[in-house]
Amino acid sequence: MLQRTETTWSINRIVALTLGIAFTLVAIVGYLTPMENSTGVRAAFGIFDVDTIHSTIHLLFGILGIAAAFTGYSRTYNQAFGVIYIVLGLLGLIPALYFPAYGHDNGLFLGLIHLSIADHILHLVGGLVAAVVGFGLVGNTRATRRANI
Image (cartoon, rainbow, N blue to C red):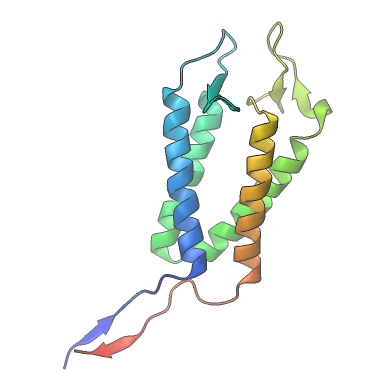
């Protein structure tokens, strides 16, 4: 009699993997989108302001999401992602946190990255979804079941 162990796909795992894949793809699009001007800003999909640092941050969160989905840390990832992105979305709405860096540029958020209102909305929505799933849904991110074969 053989024993088989299966890993179930919890909602936390699905959300972490979905966010991971989405952010990895968004990072790739951000790297490939041509620059609009000499400030280094790119308009991904025509509405999201991205630059090299912004795309690198997206890639980091994407890889972490994919890794979390396959290592049993999906709930922790969703919780951390949710908190970070809700705070980032709210802070992004405060004009005083943008520091002028170039001539006619609106400035860089905390002097680091370009952000637009579309970015803020996306950060808030993604953060809220991840937080609701990560904090609201209790259960194992990894569950095992024995089956007789």
